[in-house]
Image (cartoon, rainbow over all chains, first blue to last red):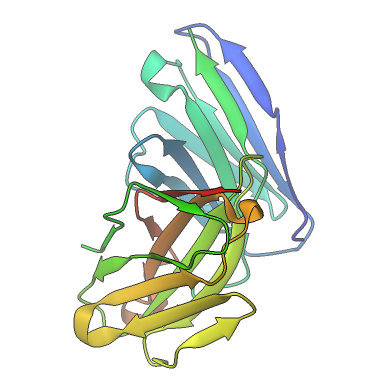
Length: 112
Length: 119
């Protein structure tokens, strides 16, 4: 299994508070992705990174920001959490843009 | 824009039945990649298969087989002699290569098919 961890695994927070989710990999892969999973929508891409300090927006990026200061870490920040951001968040990594993406265990976030 | 449709929201079968999960995709790229992932009740996403648009050979892996047909833009997944452990949500996904690899591997997922296999 690819070495991907996500922290925290579960979080409950209140509307308006900032939240940061962390994805850590030990595979030295260049590409990293954040997706959210919601019923009826499958997984949707939030942001992605194609190298250290190289990031871009995905399909559902509003309300989220990311940072990647090291190859192994990709952070997802909700500046001011809203109830619509209650979801399961998955991080994925791949060696190249056409390679298979391997997913972390997910973080379940509840915004009250 | 790329799109993946899994029209079957839920499928219920009895153990040992064969079951086919449908996946239809849309893309303007001539080079693209198709994937299937499994999400068991424990919640993790497990990679099953990756195919590129130039390889239309069907693939078999144990009880799993995949039928890729570019003519109908479909990449269907069949489980032969289903087992209770096959119960999961199955996702089909697509990424486009883009000009010069500019798509960055962004995956577009279908909505998923919930498969329940009863003993």
